[in-house]
Length: 85
Image (cartoon, rainbow, N blue to C red; front, top):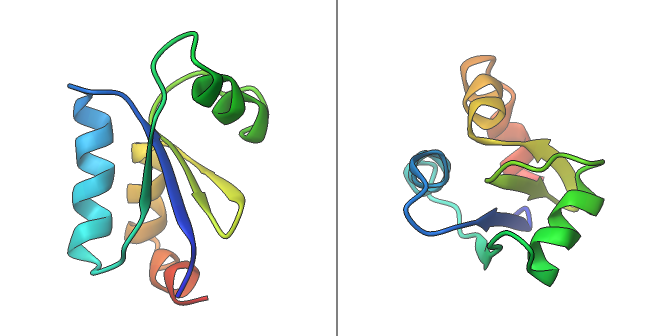
């Protein structure tokens, strides 16, 4: 099973969408609270190559992008393989 990390903030509809997709896939993930200015947010920005939006999703340490990117991977039929790795 893949290690999944998702950097989020409260009341973020994009964060909620990404978490819902992962939950529908039946995978567990580590949610990291990353409010603006926090050490967690800084880490997410650095790890993602400079992306400043949330959520930031990492699968096995690889930056996947945000909610729209995760949904695009699913539509393309590529997400299940990543989650199974």
